[in-house]
Length: 209
Figure (tube, rainbow, N blue to C red):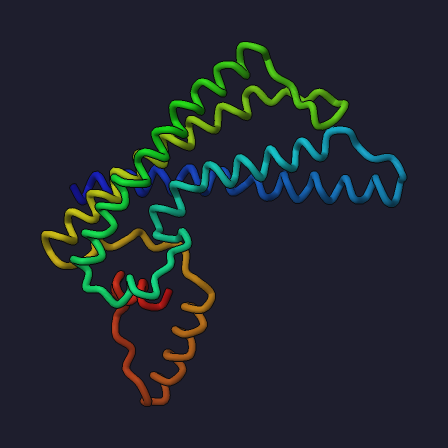
């Protein structure tokens, strides 16, 4: 089960990091549009389409990656006070009550939506350039499938935590700025012999949120 979780986390991370390059395309497109619009007085007819397609692709395809790193917004005022087994039990229930029904609806509706778009070879009506967007709408069901797969991995995490009383570790490649600054401060104090920093656990990370 742990190997399955790590495999799914790795797939989500690879996809999320690959689509992170959309930020550069988005930045270039918006920057170019600003330049030609306000300096050359010759705005493009395609920059708006590029901007929402790149942002939409990034937002959708990074969802599973964010879930794998436990990075989605959580109202954890009470949640962080619970022991790990209670946290896992509540999460497990909520995944089946809300997450999976919503994601399954996204997958099935997304396939219909994308299929119709491919059938009509849909183009954008937001600008006169008629930019093709049927291939872009394929991202909807693909992102839904990735979220569904990552959701199964998260359920496995909950099951392991309920059995062992400890959350399985996440792959660590990102860290909140607040946490980085706190660690730097603690490291500075540790060098002065004023504090001993304990290794951080997943539950500790939840408490910091």
